[in-house]
Length: 362
Ligand code: PMP
Image 1 (tube, rainbow, N blue to C red):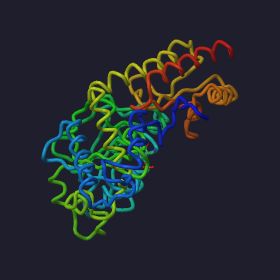
Image 2: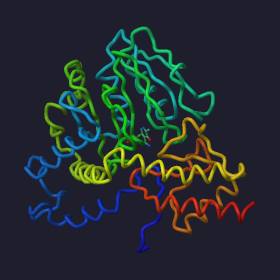
Image 3: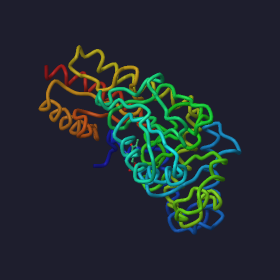
Image 4: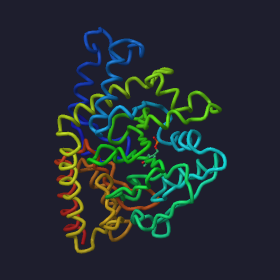
């Protein structure tokens, strides 16, 4: 295949074409070093600059100042499910989890291996068609922290507004919607995200952490699992995933060039709107999984009248150059992941395909 497809993969997922082209252009000779970024020491000046710029740009995009650090770690968001309670759930205390999908369940399960937990809210009984309402959240008496998942990749739901719990540290898994729109990041004590959806390639995980939390982490956990280790060493305690961090630094520059998070949000609303409109105007032919108030800007989940049609849809879409549309097995149907880098043109192509498919198959 010589041309690029319309890529709706859930993750790893589409990256901005400009970013890929720049990475390609400087692959053999990065910044006049005579080497690619893949071949440079992580302790060299050029790499340190990449690392520092990525941290600074991420904080700038999120409006965060000196009291936050950005860490570039490995182990995926899944390792964060364990690192969060290892660092912040002391014996005798309880950590609260808000369940809004399979990834929050996995985060909770991991915390249960480490300490005492409490489910502060769940919409599991409704097959996670919506995120819990703010009034449904019932925290425990004095939680060590409260954890939520900002966007539920599999079910296609997203928090429109985040809850606040005063001084209780709020921790979020933002793997599938980080930087998709402006939000008040200072509400959060810690945010983590695997890079492979909105930030870059797989293999690097970002952690945004408030400084005061770094002072409280217990000494009795392995060095590599302690946030303070990575903060003290500017994410250079051991060899970091250098290429991933470099790609994130290019993606962050690209987001700034799109007008920052406000510019990205505008694009994302228009893009998702094209597809949600096709669902809403189909007279019930396409049925969205998420309740409208909880719809995700990033993952659009929907069903067709039967599974046979769903299979035909995926196959014909692939032939038409639209890839990655098969839904996750726990929801079935279709899922279009329309992360920041997916273009409006791709969303328009999917919308056109949906209208045509309905006409030909109903
Ligand atoms: N949380 C969310 C919301 C996710 O979508 C994913 C991956 N799809 C994960 C966690 C797990 O991430 P990783 O594979 O990086 O461990």
